[in-house]
Amino acid sequence: MKVTHPHLVGFIRFFDYGAGSRPRGGVDALADVFKAFVAAGIGNRFVAIADNDAAAHEKLLALKTNRWPPTCRILHYPALPLLQAYPTYDPATGTSTPADVNGQAGSLEMYLGQDTLTDPNGDLMPVHWKAVEPKTGLCQGALREPDKRVAQKRFEAKLKAARSGQPAGTEDWSGISAIIDSIVRAFQ
Image (cartoon, rainbow, N blue to C red; front, side, top):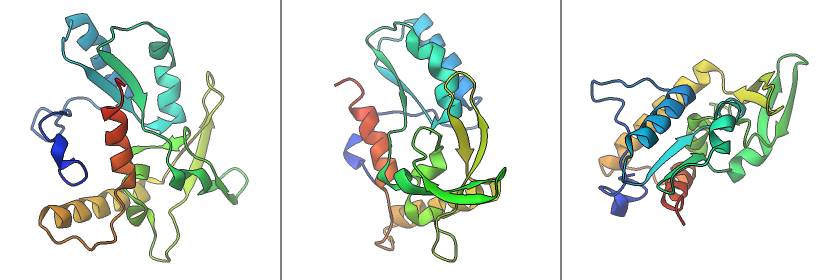
């Protein structure tokens, strides 16, 4: 947020997963915390925001059908143009095709920027299709674990460079900006 939306620092808070407390992560934990905040009567507005993939849509389906206080929202990361024709690989058939992976493979790594998702040959690291979620009928996809780690390390390096005032000037912050913008607009 300090890089893309510095004017909002102090107005929006995120769970701090690096402060030694290490809260449980994942969409199940997100749902539990959301319900706990509602049960506690938290007066401030809060947003639960999840991956834009089939698994997160599946797991939050029941939660999204309930009526909640007007001070809270359940969101998924927004659709991105980059993900509308993204390279995919189907291990069952061995075929590679571009596909719209919004809503099916939109994990956080997919929002770290095109520059973090490009392999050494200049190609985007493909999404690998997995199982179909039974309730939504959506096919879950994700980057392979080694590709996720590469994207995360590249993002950490680009973030460090931006914070130190040494950005390359070619960084793609559009996915992170879209997530923060969706949080800011959640109550409009």
